[in-house]
Image (tube, rainbow, N blue to C red; front, side, top):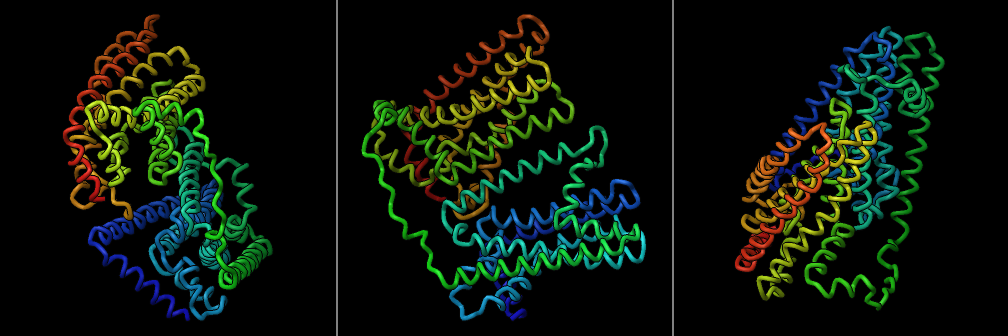
Length: 522
């Protein structure tokens, strides 16, 4: 059974790579990048050998590996691209749960993921082994750590297999993965010592993590080095017992999958209110507001729209945090967040809708309708971006004690958003491109270059177009007239937006079929 599952894993991997050369190339590049990162991490850990904080870093490393093994498969839906991890694919086969567990564990130990984990664990082992006894404990501890990661990951996937295969479950998992990524990056910034290249772990964090299962394994070699052999053996034994308990949970989940029906598709449809509501009556009076309302609902409900918007919001908040943590101790750090958010504007006007835009094409009867189309989509982006970036700017100013600079920064942000979003509208109409719905690629074959080129142009030309406001900010900085940048930036952004939307709407009316033809390729 072990050999069968290993061959199945290799066959699935080989078949996946044969689908397209681009996928195979991306896989090879990803594996090489992961191994390089793992090697550098292992080398840095090994260099900390003998230092006081080495044991704490190893504890943090073991905990991070376990979290990664659990979160990444969940955030990818089921198995992070590993089809053999989905137990629902094997539920119809005449196999008992116990052989399934053994075979799935063996299959999970094949691939780049376990190899990357072993490389990092090797560096962690070198960081805490000072004696022969410590090495004798560290080797089984590293193997148990890998087995703990694999079993925990597969047990969690089996427990939530049906939820992960549903559309809502995939959305929740992806959101959870994004949240964990944001929290992890923020935690790294908080754990990094200011002015030093090496991270240091606060004693409270290390003590808490040391009492968790991955912390047991990380602490066992350190305990053996100090001569506490009983503690080391107890930590190894407790981890082995935990792995057996996780396998029992895994077994129970497989039995439930094989013996019970999926009730998720048998739920009765929810009754919906037949009343139009105040919002529906309001939006029905204006084509612009109707399109804006539709876009906002897409940001909240459509998976692709929501993921792109949430990603933009997350990174627009991380970027200022990084700048404040490094050097920029004022609200100008929020400008970085606005710039990051604006990078996604060229890909959010029509691209995410794909061929569904044909309904809008069929109902466009005049230039006014086309202008309403562009304006409505543009307004939806601003309704999300402006309050979010305003809040980030205010919070940054309050946190750094430089509230007097908030008005001038807001003026620059509003001007930057108006210019870059207007550029996105022009790009979406003149050089439309589509996303491939079932791929992680940025664009469909033949249009990926357009996607990257347009984002590069927007990232450079957007700040350049706000040069008048930047010059004003330099001249008026730390003066009593700096607040004038707020109305000036707002007016500049609105003026650019008004001119561009009118011209773009006119062009869209004449080229809408060409836009639809480009989008349907996705």
